[in-house]
Figure (cartoon, rainbow, N blue to C red):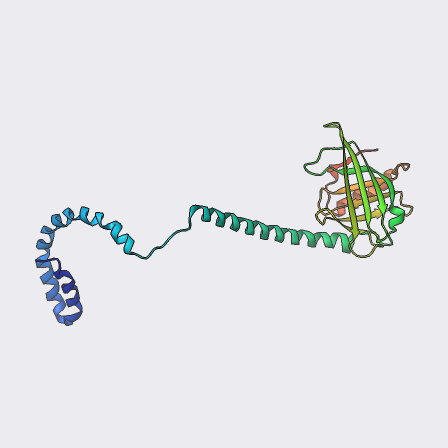
Amino acid sequence: MDLNDLPRWKDRLHDLPHPDLAAWRDDLRARWPELRQRLPDLRTRLPEWRERLPELRDRLPALRRPEPQTETLLVVAGATILATALTAALTWGWRKRVAKRLHDVVPVYDFDAERFGGSWQEYAHITQRGHEPATEAAVFVSAQEDGSLQLARRRYCPLHMRWHTEAHTLHPVRTPDIAAFESDHKGKQFGIVMLDPHYRWALLVGETVDQLWMLVRPDTKLPSRIYNQMLDEARVLGFDTSRIHVLNP
């Protein structure tokens, strides 16, 4: 028997009438012992077939995988796109909550930028995460013609025994008479939520629960009643008042 006959037998399966299938099956069973005797010969030819594998692979269509460097670039690009999309989604939700806080509820109306200008001291604030605690801080505000405020802040950190200075410009989000602002630093938003009629004290908040400042004029002593009112307002806005640190009691 020749193994080349096997394909012919397979073709016969489609050619034979249905009643002949049983006879064909019986014939195949009768020839099975002969096939088993050919198995050792097939095993001896396996090394020859293995040697021909490279040649066969060359004849197959080339399914090339990306180079390792290309794969790395694709992974980095995908991760960057995913991180950017996630950041944009979180920022959008964050800004939406901030807009509601600063625009619809909190900001002081009938705000006068000129009167708000001048020297201020930080009576109390929340130390932002990653910042050194300060024992003294002062802010100088300069009002501009377009209603924006230029802030120069100076604070002393005893941990490293040094002064930190920073400067920002706050631009009105709506109109100059509404105390809602956007900073030129990363577009952060701030709002004055409480303000003395004589501009002697003010409560300033930012976008996050880490951004809260109680400001007083250098020659003003903040009454405890006003301080408690500021604490109540901070709680309403979702700030953790236990984190508020008093600098100049």
